[in-house]
Amino acid sequence: MANTYTQLDIQLVFAVKGRESLIEKSWKEELYRYITSIVQNHNHKLLAINGMPDHIHIFIGYNPAQLLPKLVEEIKTSSNKHINTNRLSRFPFSWQAGYGAFSYSRSQRADVIRYIDRQEEHHRRKSFGDEYRLMLQKFEVDYKEAYLFEFLENVAE
Image (cartoon, rainbow, N blue to C red; front, side):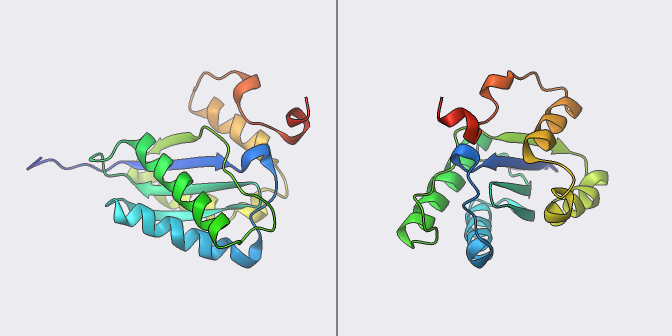
Protein backbone atom coordinates (compact mmCIF):
# COMPACT_ATOMS: atom_id res chain seq x y z
CA MET A 1 0.00 0.00 0.00
CA ALA A 2 1.40 3.40 -0.95
CA ASN A 3 2.50 5.74 1.83
CA THR A 4 2.81 2.94 4.38
CA TYR A 5 5.94 3.09 6.51
CA THR A 6 6.90 0.73 9.30
CA GLN A 7 9.77 -0.05 11.62
CA LEU A 8 9.12 -3.43 13.24
CA ASP A 9 12.02 -5.36 14.72
CA ILE A 10 11.14 -8.97 15.60
CA GLN A 11 13.26 -11.66 17.23
CA LEU A 12 12.29 -15.22 16.28
CA VAL A 13 13.36 -18.15 18.45
CA PHE A 14 12.79 -21.82 17.75
CA ALA A 15 14.34 -25.17 18.56
CA VAL A 16 15.41 -28.37 16.91
CA LYS A 17 12.80 -31.09 17.41
CA GLY A 18 13.32 -32.86 20.71
CA ARG A 19 15.83 -30.15 21.61
CA GLU A 20 18.49 -32.36 20.08
CA SER A 21 21.88 -30.74 19.53
CA LEU A 22 22.04 -31.34 15.78
CA ILE A 23 23.24 -27.99 14.39
CA GLU A 24 26.97 -28.53 14.00
CA LYS A 25 29.65 -25.84 13.77
CA SER A 26 30.81 -27.31 10.47
CA TRP A 27 27.58 -26.30 8.67
CA LYS A 28 25.81 -23.74 10.85
CA GLU A 29 27.14 -20.79 8.77
CA GLU A 30 25.71 -22.42 5.62
CA LEU A 31 22.38 -22.77 7.43
CA TYR A 32 22.48 -19.11 8.50
CA ARG A 33 23.25 -17.98 4.92
CA TYR A 34 20.37 -20.09 3.64
CA ILE A 35 17.94 -18.62 6.19
CA THR A 36 19.25 -15.13 5.45
CA SER A 37 18.36 -15.61 1.77
CA ILE A 38 14.82 -16.68 2.70
CA VAL A 39 14.38 -13.61 4.91
CA GLN A 40 15.74 -11.26 2.25
CA ASN A 41 13.76 -12.88 -0.59
CA HIS A 42 10.60 -11.99 1.34
CA ASN A 43 11.72 -8.36 1.70
CA HIS A 44 12.59 -8.50 5.38
CA LYS A 45 15.92 -7.23 6.67
CA LEU A 46 18.13 -9.69 8.54
CA LEU A 47 19.63 -7.91 11.54
CA ALA A 48 21.25 -10.88 13.32
CA ILE A 49 21.23 -14.67 13.25
CA ASN A 50 22.94 -17.08 15.61
CA GLY A 51 22.18 -19.94 17.90
CA MET A 52 23.35 -23.07 19.56
CA PRO A 53 23.28 -26.71 18.45
CA ASP A 54 19.68 -27.04 19.69
CA HIS A 55 18.06 -23.68 18.82
CA ILE A 56 18.27 -20.53 16.73
CA HIS A 57 17.65 -16.79 17.13
CA ILE A 58 16.76 -14.71 14.07
CA PHE A 59 16.37 -10.93 14.43
CA ILE A 60 14.71 -9.18 11.53
CA GLY A 61 13.41 -5.85 10.38
CA TYR A 62 9.93 -7.20 9.64
CA ASN A 63 7.98 -6.32 6.49
CA PRO A 64 4.27 -6.61 7.40
CA ALA A 65 3.36 -7.41 3.79
CA GLN A 66 3.98 -11.06 4.76
CA LEU A 67 2.29 -12.69 7.71
CA LEU A 68 4.79 -13.64 10.40
CA PRO A 69 3.54 -17.25 10.71
CA LYS A 70 4.01 -17.69 6.94
CA LEU A 71 7.59 -16.39 7.15
CA VAL A 72 8.43 -18.75 10.02
CA GLU A 73 6.81 -21.65 8.19
CA GLU A 74 8.89 -20.85 5.08
CA ILE A 75 12.12 -20.59 7.10
CA LYS A 76 11.51 -23.84 8.95
CA THR A 77 10.20 -25.88 6.01
CA SER A 78 12.81 -24.72 3.50
CA SER A 79 15.80 -24.91 5.85
CA ASN A 80 14.69 -28.33 7.09
CA LYS A 81 14.55 -29.57 3.49
CA HIS A 82 17.92 -27.95 2.70
CA ILE A 83 19.59 -29.63 5.69
CA ASN A 84 18.18 -33.07 4.88
CA THR A 85 18.57 -32.90 1.07
CA ASN A 86 22.21 -31.82 1.38
CA ARG A 87 22.83 -34.28 4.24
CA LEU A 88 24.34 -31.59 6.42
CA SER A 89 23.24 -33.40 9.58
CA ARG A 90 24.33 -36.96 10.26
CA PHE A 91 20.84 -37.55 11.69
CA PRO A 92 17.32 -36.81 10.39
CA PHE A 93 16.72 -33.11 11.04
CA SER A 94 13.50 -31.33 11.87
CA TRP A 95 12.52 -28.12 13.61
CA GLN A 96 10.10 -28.39 16.50
CA ALA A 97 6.57 -27.08 16.05
CA GLY A 98 6.00 -23.58 17.37
CA TYR A 99 8.22 -20.57 17.89
CA GLY A 100 8.66 -17.43 19.93
CA ALA A 101 8.38 -13.96 18.40
CA PHE A 102 9.32 -10.87 20.38
CA SER A 103 9.19 -7.23 19.27
CA TYR A 104 11.73 -4.55 20.10
CA SER A 105 12.02 -0.81 19.63
CA ARG A 106 14.71 0.69 17.45
CA SER A 107 16.56 1.87 20.57
CA GLN A 108 16.95 -1.79 21.67
CA ARG A 109 18.34 -3.00 18.35
CA ALA A 110 22.06 -2.90 19.24
CA ASP A 111 21.48 -4.74 22.54
CA VAL A 112 19.47 -7.50 20.86
CA ILE A 113 22.08 -7.93 18.12
CA ARG A 114 24.84 -8.13 20.74
CA TYR A 115 22.81 -10.69 22.71
CA ILE A 116 22.27 -12.86 19.64
CA ASP A 117 25.90 -12.57 18.53
CA ARG A 118 27.05 -13.76 21.99
CA GLN A 119 24.91 -16.90 22.23
CA GLU A 120 27.77 -19.28 23.03
CA GLU A 121 29.00 -17.04 25.84
CA HIS A 122 25.47 -16.54 27.16
CA HIS A 123 24.69 -20.27 27.25
CA ARG A 124 27.69 -21.06 29.39
CA ARG A 125 25.65 -19.53 32.22
CA LYS A 126 22.04 -20.26 31.26
CA SER A 127 20.24 -23.14 29.55
CA PHE A 128 18.02 -22.55 26.55
CA GLY A 129 14.95 -23.59 28.56
CA ASP A 130 15.75 -21.02 31.25
CA GLU A 131 16.53 -18.37 28.63
CA TYR A 132 13.24 -18.94 26.82
CA ARG A 133 11.15 -18.91 30.01
CA LEU A 134 12.76 -15.62 31.01
CA MET A 135 11.95 -14.11 27.61
CA LEU A 136 8.32 -15.17 27.94
CA GLN A 137 8.14 -13.71 31.44
CA LYS A 138 9.89 -10.48 30.45
CA PHE A 139 7.40 -9.97 27.62
CA GLU A 140 4.49 -11.02 29.86
CA VAL A 141 3.48 -13.87 27.55
CA ASP A 142 1.12 -16.39 29.13
CA TYR A 143 2.31 -19.93 28.53
CA LYS A 144 1.80 -23.46 29.71
CA GLU A 145 4.99 -25.22 30.74
CA ALA A 146 3.82 -28.52 29.23
CA TYR A 147 3.64 -26.97 25.76
CA LEU A 148 6.87 -24.99 25.68
CA PHE A 149 9.25 -27.46 24.09
CA GLU A 150 9.65 -31.14 23.50
CA PHE A 151 12.59 -31.54 25.83
CA LEU A 152 14.51 -34.76 25.31
CA GLU A 153 13.48 -36.15 28.69
CA ASN A 154 9.81 -35.72 27.70
CA VAL A 155 10.13 -37.30 24.26
CA ALA A 156 10.48 -40.83 25.67
CA GLU A 157 7.36 -40.47 27.81
